[in-house]
Each structure stands twice: as C-alpha cells, then as structure tokens.
Length: 264
Image (cartoon, rainbow, N blue to C red; front, top):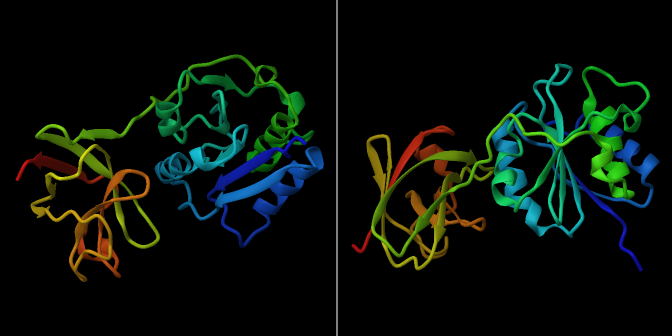
C-alpha cells in the first residue's frame, strides 16, 4: 500500500493567528490524503538565515518524496521569484531569497524551477499571503504527482549555494567561520562542521576571548562555564551545562570566529 504524501511546513507565521491553519486547509482541499508535519512556525520574523539553518538540519530525517514548504518571505508581493528545488529524494518550495542556500549546498545536482504557472495557484492571489495562495496549492499538486516541470522553466537562483566550514581533524590547521544560529536553549551554533577523530586540542576565538574546552556530552562538563560540544547536526556549538550560553558569551549571529586545531 502506497504511503500518503508528506508535506512539511516551515514559516515565521507563529501559531496565534490563522495563517498556518489556512495553508493546511488549502493543502487538504487539494490533497486530502496528505500528511502535514509542522517543522516550526517560530522562526524569528523575516529571519531568512535562521530558516535556512532549521530546514538544513531537519530535511534528511523526513521520508523520501517529502515536499517542504518554506515561507520566510520579506519580499512577498514584489517581483521576487518563487523556486522549487528538486532532488532525487525531496522537493522544496521557497522564495528565491537565500532560504535554501544550505539545501542547495547539500543536494547532489538539484533541479531548480521558477514557479510561474498560475494555473496551479489559487484563483485569487493576495499580495501579502503567498503561503496560502501559491506555496500551499503548489505543494499539494506536487504531492499528488504533478511534475515540477509543469510549474515553469528551470532557472539559476539569485543566491549562491553555501556549505559549512568542514574541519578535518586529521590535520593541524586554522579555520575562519561565524555564528549562524542561537537556539531556544541559548546554545551558540557555529558553521564549523567537524569530521574525524576528536582527540585534538580546540581553541575557538570570539572577539578577544577564547574557549578551549571540548566535551563529548553535557554530563561530562562543569556547570556555569562555556565549553564546546559537537552538536547533533555535526556543527561545533558553544554551550553551558544547564544554562544559556548566550548569556555568558555576548556574541550575536554572524560574529566572526577563528578555530585552531592542534595536537595539544
């Protein structure tokens, strides 16, 4: 028996208003058998970079053929493109504003389509709510089996694909990077992707300060003191056991970092 199609939603709409419910209603009106999963609707308003990180750290754990709707769209109502990015296993619909930069950096030879065919939009399209009137019906049609080639021509996105700073622990080296996200717990997530044996000495420079202690788990670390940990996504994080690292380390997202790796 064929599994029902899965559609996953990521927005900055919050849950207080009717925006998410309206999108879900449109999807189920077109694809009544769809399973709809909410990734998050608590992205900081208009924070494209936060959404880019959240969708990257999430997508690979979904069933194959999932369609992702990603709506953090400060340019709604303008002439910005909506794109559909399709790989062998997944489809993503998002504004062409950088939200899918890490996705494009992770997928093998994805196809990028400019969503232009208004036949698959709702009959009346608001200039302020494309999530309901464009993204939701497009995703529902794709989940029902519509070929992405019907949506419009292939295109080159306006933003560049981005990959994380891969840190190879076989060598002693120095890497430049940045903070990309601060999560709900106050953990400070960097763009250093750690590969290989972790029996090295880490020295992370933030401004004029340094963090040098790397622990494999929270249980091994002391309390009330920032340390480094390799998070579940493989990225290096600055954390505090039973605490909020962002209260200890006053460094905003996009702060520059320098990571030194040595044998001790």
